[in-house]
Image (cartoon, rainbow, N blue to C red; front, side, top):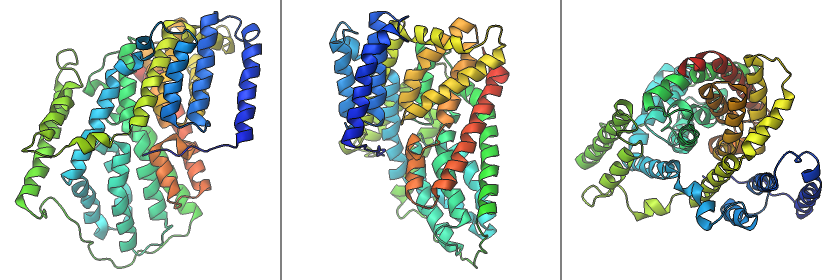
Length: 474
């Protein structure tokens, strides 16, 4: 899904560019005086990237190509190959392949089978579904590695259930369900590093910066406890908030809606296709769990699976599925990686981290330093629209800070992952929350109150985990 960025007026953009030009003249002799000329140009490139990817009228794909060109124009790289370094990351191709494989789940009817389980609960009433839906969303990233695919899968069935209960279009049930498949769905995607594009990138950054090379199960054990604790608190708050602010509705006498389940496939071949996809996906996940990344690269099982699904006798994937991939986002992520690598290699990230130390009083304890870092991560995150580009740019700076202060790298790395992944205050901060907001079911007040509370909980939980639980994994 494309996130529609807000387009500002021509006058506004001219003012922004004028301000940047003025800073270009003033900054080298003031707050960038500790940076080398190359590092000053790198900071300028970073500021330009933030502008192009947030409020610029230029499409993000073209903006990403411009940034690659600017790396060469500013003399920050020696060759075209140097500017394109970010496109060598295996994380980009992991996202590409998993996104394509997610289409197979839909073609095989897995989405209908999963969603139909919600319809089976309709006789038990909306409260049963209000409990089952977040549990399902918390587990689904293991099977379906796309937050937006999960939203599109469940949304029609939520509407059907809302109608079946006889509720209004803006009922508490529907508002809560939209929060779950919108905001919670995005936050919960980091439960496994194969759960979506964002955790895939995060796992790659852990390797690239020599923080940790975690297996599938290790990632799950590190992330699951604090993540589920955060989601539980936010879910309870969201339900209580909606019940307190909106009048309750009495469900009507309902009949079991028509649901197509795994036993209702029209032909035996459809059922065979469904079970073939389920078994092969399960084998891929099992391979991730039981094998070592050094012995079996994480990207290898999905690569093989994509080829199998493309075989003529299987016929689950074709060229049209590859053409349907969001290549604009591919360019954005590749350019983000190139900038992140540049920040690290020429020392700009380290100097920025040293500047950050000025905000930390002498003699501060580790917990206080972690709190300061959490605040800085949050401020960085609010600048970016896309969480994936945010973490790629933020990560080298924060890891440099951790090296200077002696804070364990794993704790700081997952602090970044948790806060960036859990900050969705504005609807445009994630595709799923943006889509849920665009339905008009959740009011602006509803969204901002729930999203702000969610962000605060994620930040506090991440600070506590970084100062205690994640220290055990160093």
